[in-house]
Image (cartoon, rainbow, N blue to C red):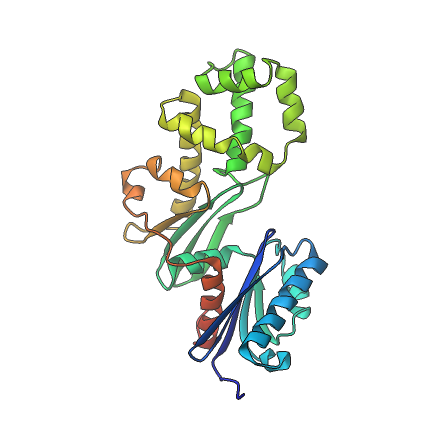
Length: 290
């Protein structure tokens, strides 16, 4: 089989699973694989290289025929240029750009449009795509970042609970219920918090969202706090009134009710996935774009 000169690969890898897509002329082939977080380097490289081999097999190509494909690889855990270079060196591809998974999420959601993305789940980041490229704010994780995220909301709820225990804040139904679940013991709350992961804190987020919508003062305050962070990011990114805003992740859409009428009017559904974004970024390079 003769290889198309228009050969593109997009790869999206995270802590739970990974995906890859190969476009060869009019053909599009997708495969799925195991976890591929670059912080667990060896396992991630095994997963990504298996994806590439799988793509070649399903396309009827020898793996060596993919070496010149234009590729974009977006992996969770790629936080430095050194990590990016290390991943690229471990791939059987000569022309691969490696980033974390934030640019691919933004490019997938927006397509070719200028606009912004607020990706809010257990963690969070806010980014904008424009003629200058893609810029991202946040995504630093707990304990020093991820404002507006499920993890941060959960941790902030426990902070508000302890302030109420000390008499520095009024209780609400939400804080009273949570304290009751810990046997009305501040010590039990502390013990939970000291061993809690970001995912543990994030389990409290759905209750915060629901209580806020029901009028709970603490829940509403925390949602406004998260929305203020998103708004500040969008201002810093110079998000414009005529640009779309995609609210992504398990928690992102919940902020639509708290951002204010001006931003809520800009909210649009994402056009595609992070895998679509990885492929789009590879193609942009082939077309002479950023």
